[in-house]
Image (cartoon, rainbow, N blue to C red):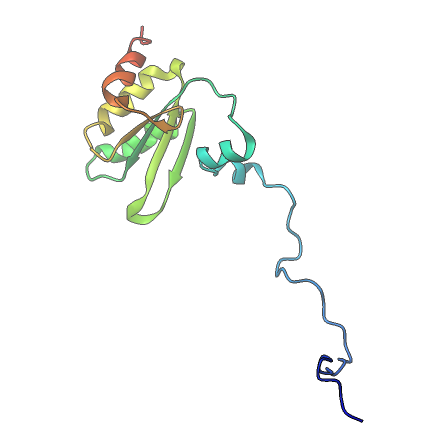
Length: 144
């Protein structure tokens, strides 16, 4: 009797049943932790969860630089309302968020890191035109 040319080939049936677990980690939580949510970039966080209800903020982001002021600048950045280190090694960048009531501390940090071209000023976590020339002097008006 001739075999059917359209029939699938016969495969041997294994004597055991493979485990249907494909992920190498046994217990993963379904929800991200608070640390994982804090580490999200502002753009991704906004895309996933909508616009956060944060007050107006100015963020200073600066790289590693040579000199004695670096340790002082990092210490001042860590004392900000929100601090994050991005990257690692020689490519580390420090991001410090300040709210309007912290205008003095923002000015003090910017006095140290503002002379470097690689320093970025973000308004509500976004780069905006004239952030250094217009927005920062407007925040200085809050200093009494």
